[in-house]
Image (tube, rainbow, N blue to C red; front, side, top):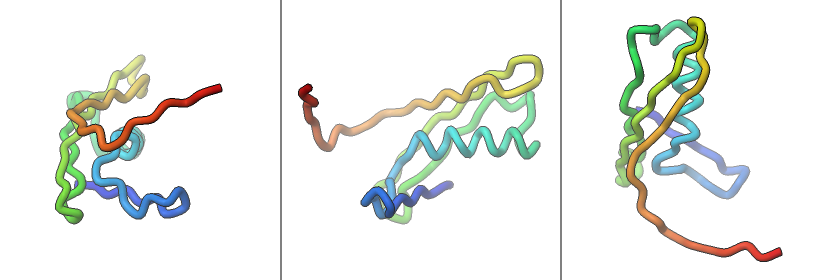
Length: 85
């Protein structure tokens, strides 16, 4: 389970953050806490906020090093907008 705080951007806590899980996967691999046989994990977030969610995290290796982290899951759109130039 993880949590993501970003008060500097006006976000007290993000209920489910793919960005946080991608960074967590890179950190865990770099620290040797998950190794090559482990292709990924399911992250849980938002439980403390009563807005639980899950993020699937997979990592791609290249020559034994981390090449990419892929995240996925379902989302609910809470707002939409358009940018005009």
